[in-house]
Image (cartoon, rainbow, N blue to C red; front, top):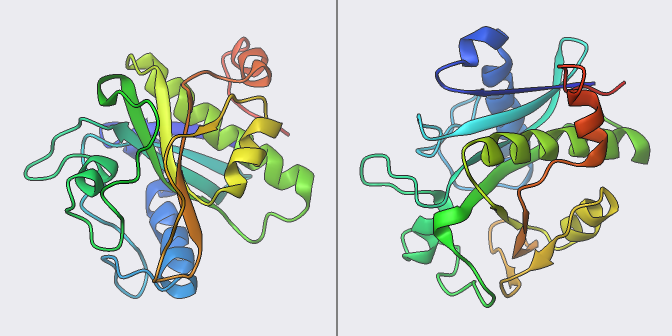
Length: 210
């Protein structure tokens, strides 16, 4: 597996990877979890897929198997900010506006959204490798842009998974139950730091894992 990172300005350098990410998102978030979000029969794409966004995707050979999106919490694009900021302002139906219960500074924070690993990635080690590549890519891009913290509205078990990868993750928001999919979510926060394994891989100029 290998990681690729890009913004809208550089997505053309990676063929159809971005489009395949949108296809993968549609299969999980729309077809499986029944989220009421913008989509057609093939892809899911919302208003936060804009020039403020960055993407960390994972390829197995030439096949996309996972990815996530990140952007500054205080990003502004038209009438929208980030997904998390809009939720805090009460602009997103289904996400409570009072989730934050711990310390949070939007000026140094980037949100991570639409995290997904394809079901074709089986086995604990393979899924751990895929998640590690995704998260390290997010941390690298965010820290390169000056971010200090990554936040994510995610299922609580992600906290244990990320701690297992060596990230100092804490829950800074209360847990709530999503009516659309029946799953619990909470706000997680961690320093925007790349793992030691990724640093070793990057020393050779390539962020990858086999």
